[in-house]
Image 1 (cartoon, rainbow, N blue to C red):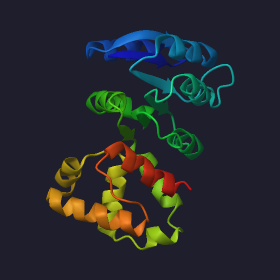
Image 2: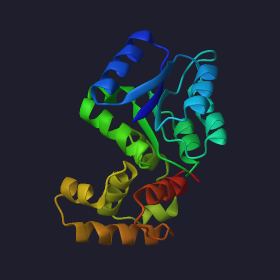
Image 3: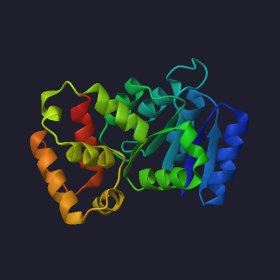
Image 4: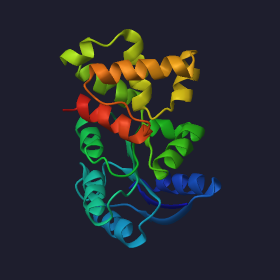
Length: 214
């Protein structure tokens, strides 16, 4: 699986290269700034991009803007964004494009190697991988929305796990309930949110998050 990596801190970049290669990813390009990232993504068209939000020359949202620009040339390009903190504006920008796999992880999650590698693979496969803390803050920010007030505590828990990109089976295991019970919760909460149920995990997660960020 081919990866383009963008990280301006040399030590972290080298560490990520070694980690990815240890799990049979091929890092076809590793860059440290926005313009180089755009060029690498368009040239290599990787299976997945792992990108730091803040890159030179601006050290603001250069990484995210580079990804959005590249996606105009390579629609559906899977991208996993890494960020030092939860930055809701960046999360909303990334999730507004429903084409291709998307992920948003805090850099602190990289230390959990299994979780990080699983996120890279899930995004490369066209799925979604959202940091639980990002999901938590997005949900908390939208508690004033009337439809969310109608959700039960159990339904909110299921919604948060859906947003992390978990399958029905994974949600059932996490909550110690049956998959049938999870399916019922999902049908109910999507109905309350005015969203049709779907068997497409990526699409249903992006639909829910798009609603929460409206």
